Length: 252
Image (cartoon, rainbow, N blue to C red; front, side, top):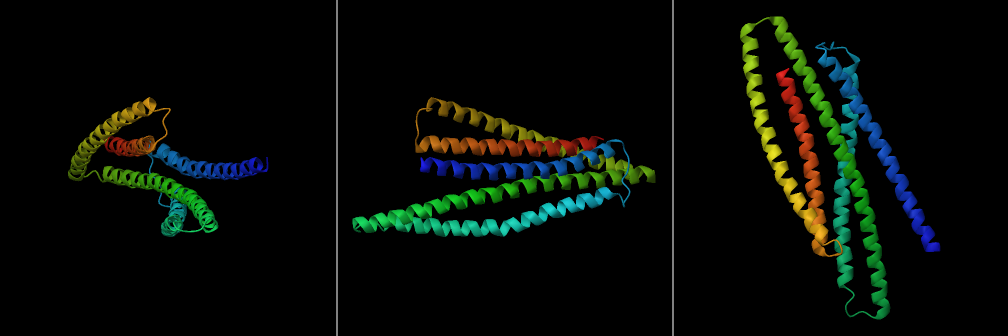
């Protein structure tokens, strides 16, 4: 019963941590999307931003905050990876060192091995949390950077229209048409790659279903391949959304 209480306590600690991280991600993403939506709404009305508009300060502060957090996490990730490598080597050395030892010595070595492996699991979990921060921040920074690019593009177009220079306007139209054509080709290539990965994922799912009662190295590898495929598909969709946004901006 005591063991059950301790397991429940550990699970509660993990759940609280997971909920807090989820709340932090929601708040961070909400700040970025709220600002991006507000800027998009202004751009769609063809209004130009004044250089002293508070939106530029908000963009800069959000960008710096996300980049600072990303840079702060980076050395921690590297340190954890190095420590994890050392710990794994130590654990394997301990496992191989049991041969020829007495029962008590071997039992002590096993306890040490279990301690090393548990520490490795905790480090992996923390490394995953740090990587989640980097992934989310990189995605949000990408959204802000694309928004900054849209503002610059909008300002350039408005200035070009005001100049009433036919030669420059014609040259810009040709440049945008060429860029749009290139974007279409890139989008087509990504879509083809996603279709191929989708077929691979379906094949893996079908195979896993046929092995639903089997727990083996093969099924574990198949699940890892499926997760990798899902991640690649998510990245592909995000990239497509960004490219389609650029294409739409060119057309406008």
